[in-house]
Image 1 (cartoon, rainbow, N blue to C red):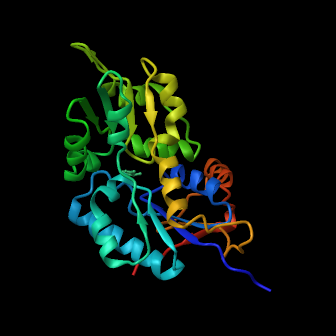
Image 2 (cartoon, rainbow, N blue to C red):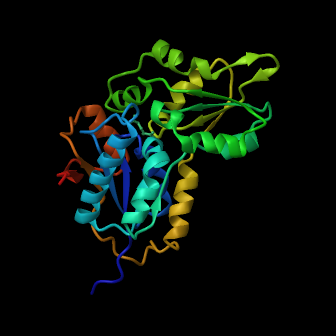
Image 3 (spheres, rainbow, N blue to C red):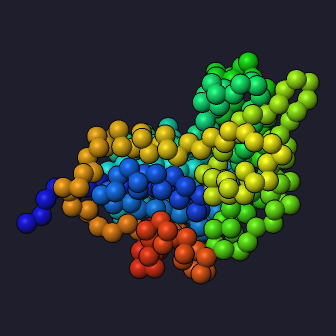
Length: 274
Ligand code: DGL
């Protein structure tokens, strides 16, 4: 006899970064069926034009909706969320949870009134991001920094390719200002790839700061929207999946990393775009 089924959640990103968001969702909703969708064929999103990105994300999410019929979608990508959420919400009826830079919490927490946003080029220049700064951080000194190699560096790290500490330090160093009475005390991780490098960034930081990763707040939002429906009494609708739009180069490092997220080799699936 089959009982009620637990919800299916699609967690989407340009690549592997959204795994940093998948993790707390899996921890808070262990019975939910998680379908992680990586647009590896379209990675990276950071330098894409807005028009191109709207079309690309629409086509990947459309294909994922048709194939997996999720109860909720998490756009675990700041570069996409700061642009495409209105379009997705107009097109689909299921709840769509976005990931946007945690500017409000940073402005509230910063004691020095000086914080940095580490984000892709796309997120940094969005009207959406500028509006959040105007609305919540008017009285703060805000440094926005977009190192183009940082998201690819996080992907490579997760694949087990090792990390160049000096290059990583050069990527984050402009976030650390200490001049004219302003000293950075908080850094917003405005791209879901960056938490994958958090331990290394903490080690390399010129001084300790508070790093804000929005993932736990997103997991709380997802659990709230699903009404905590994923209880142990429910049957999972199917196995968790890792779905990619491109070929997955399953290095030993990536295999190990995916296993840590509960995704074994047989969970890897190709998504055809229409
Ligand atoms: N992980 C994505 C984000 O949160 C973008 C990385 C990229 O594709 O450039 O912005």
